[in-house]
Image (cartoon, rainbow, N blue to C red; front, side, top):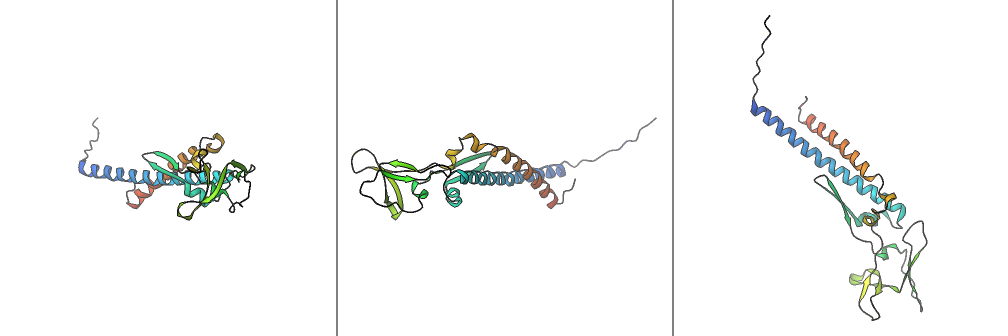
Length: 186
């Protein structure tokens, strides 16, 4: 009994072109998903830090930088000047023991012994402390940054898992959207 024979002609150029378009879709979907995941990590970090640190969200956002590159998310940023934690300039007293600052929302003020408030370069208000017994040098004091809080387990719990979920959801939806936009329905 003879079978039915079917011969197919495969145009390798068309298949290569199709594969290149799929590769382009994959790269664009990856970029879109990574951007969305890094924004989610940044938002979660700022929200969690806002619950703990006695600062406005705007101040926290300015000090954290989250970048995504090649599947890695890097959390950076700078430390926050202690002067940002003050609601107003401290009063000058004759015998001051230092400047008290409320760093944490759920804790009392912290006294920075020997510190003083003054206007620094550019007319900006800061809190300084002398280094040694002499009048100079002085150093500017900083509080905890959002990136420093990452090491606290209760602070960082679940952020990576959420970012991975956001990445995978966004990757799939972006990839399918790029295919649909290009009218390449399988």
